[in-house]
Every structure is written in C-alpha cells, then in structure tokens.
Length: 110
Ligand SMILES: [Zn+2]
Image (tube, rainbow, N blue to C red):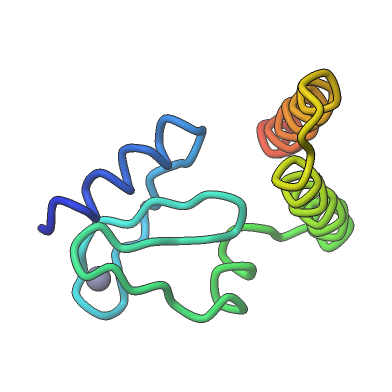
C-alpha cells in the first residue's frame, strides 16, 4: 500500500467518503468512495464511472440532483480560486459548505 494512496484515502474519509463493501475489481483491495468517485487504496485505480453509479445510486432522480450539486460545487470552487476579496471568499466557502451538507443529507436519506 503506497503512502500517498493511504493519505489520500484518509483525507477522503475525513471529508465524508465511505468505505465500499465491494472490493476493487482489479486487485480485490479496499476502496473508498466519495461523490460517485471510488478509489482503490491498494492499486489506486478507479473503475469506470458507469459501474460505480449503478452500484451507488439506484434512484435516477437522486442521481440527477447529485450531478447538479456536483456541478455547482465545481463552479464554486473555480470561483473561489479566482476570488481575491476575503469577504467574498468567505461567502463562497459558506455556499460550498451548504452544498456539501445537502449532498450528505441526500445520501443518508437513501
Ligand atoms: Zn485495486
């Protein structure tokens, strides 16, 4: 297990990622999943996104909400990157936090 991967996995878990019960299809290693993104801690491979979506989301409607929120989240992080005004940065950060909370809530409802 490489140190970088373990660190990455730990960071993902701290940010609310979950451990997948299904082992890695390539090496049978342990995988963590966050926002539809699964990462194998052992070999670092990420299987096809399509496969993960079938595993993780069974309700199409919910998947769409998730995709919308995900898009918004990446827009906000781009905004945050460009923003130099401290107050506006705080505002964007608050929005990002809210979005993440919403996403987590949607997931725990399942
Ligand atoms: Zn693997």
